Image 1: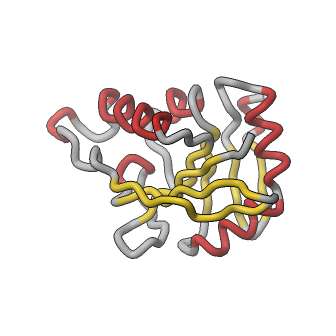
Image 2: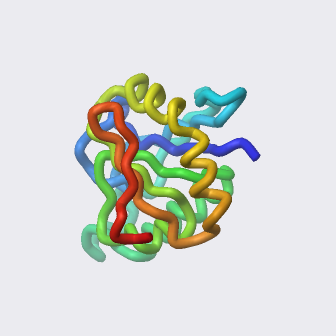
Length: 144
C-alpha cells in the first residue's frame, strides 16, 4: 500500500510555525517507488471554520480528519499540532518537522519511509508522534 502524506503549508508552499488545522493548504505526497511524489494540492476549507468556538475546536478537527481520510491520507506533517493531537493520532501518523522547506522534509521522509510504513501497518489507531529534526526521524517514546 502506498502511503499518502498531507503537508500543512502556507499560500507559498512553505511550512510555517502554526497548527496543522490552520494551514492554508495541504500538499498531498504519495509514496511511489520508495520516494514521495507530489500528487495533489488541497485547499484547507476549514481553516477559519467557526472560530467563535475557540482555537482547537473539536468539530473543526473532525471535519479536517474526514476531509483527509476521504483523500486517503495516512500521515500529517506540520510544525505544530494543537490540543486535538490525540484525536489526530487515532486516524493518522502525526509528524512534527522543524524546517520550512518541503524539499528538506521530503528528503528525510524518503530515507525513513519503511519506518513510517511499519508504524502505519502495525497500528491502525493511536499512532506514535514522529519528529524530524536536523535530518533525523525520531519517535515519541512516551506513546509506546
